[in-house]
Image (cartoon, rainbow, N blue to C red; front, side):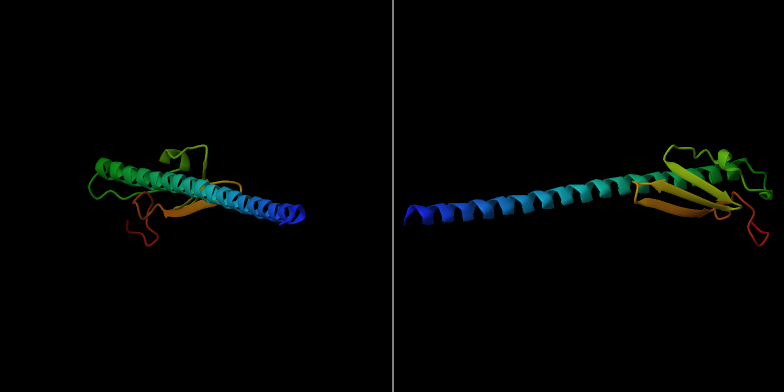
Length: 128
């Protein structure tokens, strides 16, 4: 084997090793990004579950404080629900509460709660 063949073989090995390492690095970066997004989505889901737990607790408080046979007269204002958080967007339209948690600039989690289901608003048919 002469010097030219050795140099060509070495450059081929070097090129393939560099390409393989580049592909491996891109795959590792993509996997890490997916793991980070999944962790952020889980945190957003936890915040939405916290909102649901708060609504359930508020409904239980109202049931304990209500006089027997007393019906709910009006829906509480969003401020009365005690759900303020910097990363939670609340939109209340009548008995419907839409809660949005921004995961990142492209992803968000949204849940819609019917406050009448929790007993916090009068039911649409008139009976709670």
